[in-house]
Image (tube, rainbow, N blue to C red):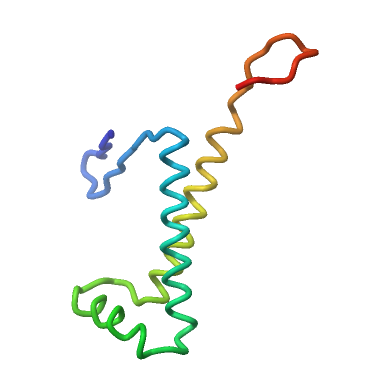
Length: 104
């Protein structure tokens, strides 16, 4: 992991390199969490089920409500998926005999 800091700035950037398998696993985990939260929330139609989560978020000082957290997870999943696609689209398959199938 690399931490990049700009002199005179409060902003920092962290760069992490993950292999494609770990990235895929993280995306799948986040997708499952997003699906579970979204299913439990049901667009606010079952407040008795989601009230404890809303209370926890509020009491913990979170900047998120449950719907905002679900939306943020969706955005994060999209960003990671696009980053992974962008990373692998530039990889050329190994060259061999053109009459043979491409092997990775």
